[in-house]
Amino acid sequence: MSDRPLRSRLTVSKRDLSALSREKTIVLALLIQLFVAAFSSFLVVGLTSLYAPGSVEGGDVTVAVVGDASDEFVDAAAEVEGLVVAEYDSLDTATGAFEVDQAQAVVEARTEDDRIRVTVTAPASSLRKTVVVVRLREALEALERTERVERSANLEHELVPLPPEVDASPYLGFSYTVLVPLLLFLPVFISGSVAVDSVTEEVERGTLELLRVAPLSLTEIVEGKGLAAAGLAPAQAALWVTMLSLNGIPVSNVVGVLLFVAALSVIVVGGGVGVALAVPDRQRAQLLYSLGVLGAFAAAAFLPEPPATTAARLAIDSPAATTLPSVAGYAVVAVLVVVGLRLFVRRVDPESL
Image (cartoon, rainbow, N blue to C red; front, side, top):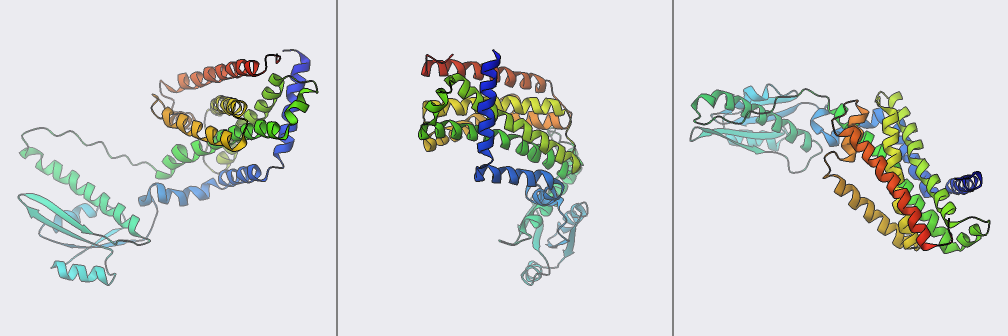
């Protein structure tokens, strides 16, 4: 590659980046991501209430318990923090307490055929409904574990062992399995969309031919636009990683994470530019691009290690045997996309070198 084509590509990239700063929709999307990254430590607490409702303090939940097996449930409920049990003599009195909001749920635990049958009455709709249901579920899981242990001697066949209880922070899980991949992948999606808009807008306005009079080949124009769009994602990712670290969510393997994002960005942007050249209509191209990206990421979920898992493993410095090969694989695919795009441009315009 000579100096002149390189300067030509950089000139096109600078022109596109300058025009991008005037796009209100893109600027707004960047500001939203900036807000999420800058205040991630505060947002994690609120968003975790949706991701893992039981992790958020919501006050004590009082449960009215009746039945001949109520003692077993009471013992299990004692293991659940924030769950208060009130025993009643009859179902009617327990239901009455529930109706006047003295209890947030009713649990009827009775022994039938040497088994414990539990019937739960919970609010149909309430701001605290999710917390009530989650804490009741934890109590029932504790009851199940206890019964399995106590009845194991009476079983003719050995049961499959339950997985060990893990005392892990839900905030940690949400931060690295949801928040970090979200902030890494959103810039990639936006970069591809920017590339589609940039190419289709030049075609619709008729300025693509003017650029070629400069003189610039179609390859130089396309690669310059692709360079501007593809460079946005890793630049944003670097900024988001810095802000996450400042908010107490450190990201390990920063170089590997940025290379991973850069490879995905090249793949997505290359695909977007190809769609824009094949379908030079802005709305149709954006629709095809969106469907293609969604389909690709849905298909990627069936890979041995999906992209979100790769991002999370890199971020927590816990790579599996498939993590680094996955990153290398994305890099190879990115190179193939660039080569394929150049061949496609040459096919569209045989005079482009």
